[in-house]
Amino acid sequence: MVRGQSGGLGQDIKTGAFFLATLVMWAVSVLFEIFFNKRRELFPIFAGFIFFQSANWAIRKFLSRDPLFVNTSVSLLHSSITSLAVMIILANQWMSNGANKMFGHSQLVQFTWPGAYSALCISCGYFAYDQWDMLLYRLYSGLIPSILMHHLLLLLCFTLALYRNVTINYLILTLICELHSVFLHVRKVRRMAGFRDARSKIVKLEWFLNWTTFLIARFASHVLITIKLIKDASKFGKGVELPLALFGMVGMNLLNIFLGIDLFKAYRRERRSTERILHNHHD
Image (cartoon, rainbow, N blue to C red):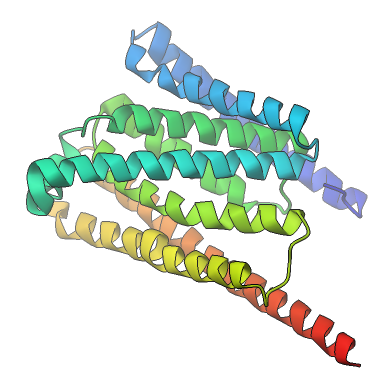
């Protein structure tokens, strides 16, 4: 990303150094758990990192070398894979146990649905990859970039849950939001490809799906998870599970509010841009 002022550049470097340090500390922690504490079940974290980094190399070699296009394309790949995996995990549990049992406190906190642990590990690997890629190509701006804070928050909450092997199913529920991320990334790829006509039926459908999945799969689902945590607060033990879960959900809900505001602004900009083009055309 091009910076207009040296002060902004220096600020970005300092911000990048902080988030790079946290990423290195996270990687050292995971390596320690795998090799010294013999936690081989955590290996899919690095498998996920390698997979998405390999996708990055392939897209860079065969499609485009634009860092933002490559990053967005890999993010779209992750969102698509994760959404499918989460839907399969939830569908299997729904058919096996029914809604009442699968959303019970003990099921969400003490048990782990088949495939959930590995899915969470792979997503951790992706978030680490994405953090690294954004830092490497400086795909961020500001003193406290929301995207880097988002990844740091997820890595902290997800990894601690994986270490303790608790609340895994709760975190799988939070990943329902990746269904909305699919359409966020589709929109970015579509705009980078130069297709920006808001009058198009495809673009209108895309925006409909974008808003629908934002409201249902991201905003409403995270609010309901937060309510569920508060309702079941007395059922948690005296450990860090409840405070960590509530801290993570408060952070996610705040980020969702900011994302919704940004999404609304983007929608208005796109509509206004098309209206200006139509006005100039008629003139």
